[in-house]
Image 1 (cartoon, protein in one colour):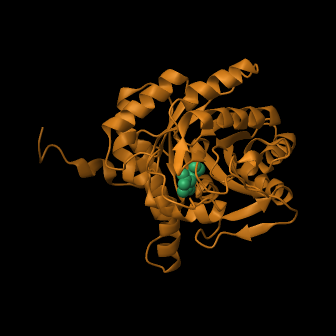
Image 2 (tube, helix red, strand yellow):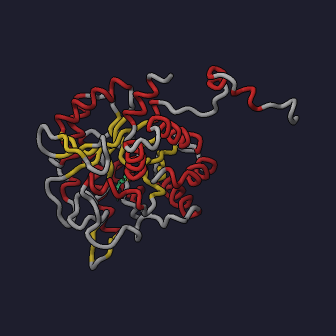
Image 3 (tube, protein in one colour):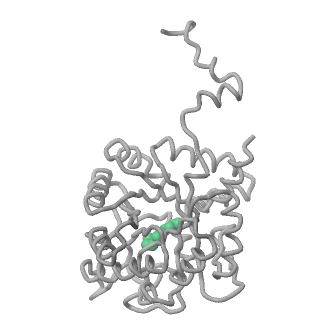
Length: 326
Ligand code: PBG
C-alpha cells in the first residue's frame, strides 16, 4: 500500500505514539562501567584525554560506586595501574596486585555488583605488549600460561566474569580449562573476540599507561578492514568456551556486531572505547554537539545493531539520563 493511504508520518505525530512504536531501547541494565584503579589512598587522578574519567585508589572507588549502585548499573570492568612493571607482567597475577585488592574490596562492599576483570598483560609489562616478548616478537603459547594465572588470581579474589583482551590464539580454551581445573566452572568468560588494532584506543593508553614501547599491536589485534575474519574469531572463541563475545571498538564496527548477531546465538557485547568517548567530550565541551543527545543516540544505535551489553565510559551519565528520561 502506497501513499496517500500509507503515511509513515502518522506514527510519529506525538511523543507517546513514538514511544509506543519504538523498536529498540537502551536500558541501564545494558551498561558496564570501565574503571581504572591504582595503588594508594585518596587518589582521584584525572585522565587528561578523557574528561570525567579518573584513576581511583580503592577507597575512593568504593565511594564512587555508591552512585553506580543507586543508579542500578549492573556491573563494572576493572583495569589496573600497577606499582611495578616487568617483562612478564607479574603484578597482573600477584596476590597483592592492584586488581586483586580492588576486586576483594569491591565484592566485600557490594556483593551484588558484577565485577568483570580485564585479563591482559599490557598494563603490567614494561614493554607494554599484551604478551611475552622474545626477540621483538610477542610469543603466543608462553603468554597463555600467564593469562591463565591472571584469570585464576582474579577469580580467586572474587571476580564474577573474566574478560581476556590480549588477542592471543587459544586463550579462551586455556583460560576455561584453567578455571575449570580450579573448580571455577561457573565463572563466565566475556571474550574480546573481534578486537581490532585501532587508533581509537589512544586515550586509554594514557589512562592505563599501557602504550607499547616498541612497534604496535597489529600482529595480534585484528586488521581493521576485515569482517569475515572477525566472524572466525568469534566462532573460535565460542567453540573454546566463551559465554559472551565482544566487538571492539564499537562505532566503526557496527556491521560486525550485526553480522555476528545474525550468525551466533550468544550475548554480544560492544566496547565503546576511549577515543569514541573523548571525541564526544571534546566536541561537547566546545558546544558543537549536544552531549546527551549524541550519547543516547549512539548507544541506542549499538542496541539496534544487535548489542546486548555495552561497556562505556558514559555509563553513569547515560544511566542518569535514562533514569530521568523526559
Ligand atoms: C588491554 C585493553 C585495551 C583496551 C581495553 N583493554 C588497550 C589496548 O588494546 O591497547 C582499550 C579500551 C579503550 O580504548 O577504551 N589490552
